[in-house]
Length: 127
Image (cartoon, rainbow, N blue to C red; front, side, top):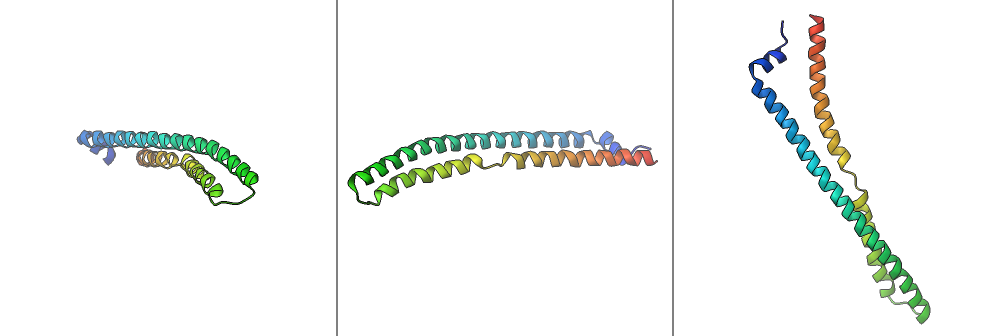
């Protein structure tokens, strides 16, 4: 006796084709999302590195100006502070991980399909 899943696949191959097409679309979507995520991470890393170099330079200049004039002015903290803030934001964007979650969704879908096929295989052995 043929298992109902196999009978359905034989009688309605369009369902199998639609299921496979949906898997392909899911993988395409996840690859596109992963590509965008990598691009955002690269942009965040570039921003963080450029802002870090700028922040270090501006901090050094602020320290020298503060020592030279012997007085405190709020711009000596605010200007390098903005660069340090940009460094932090760029680093957070660069370190954000979202690709792993997307890949896990695809793996979960495929594992569910394989679980159904294992169940069918075990049911056939039992008969």
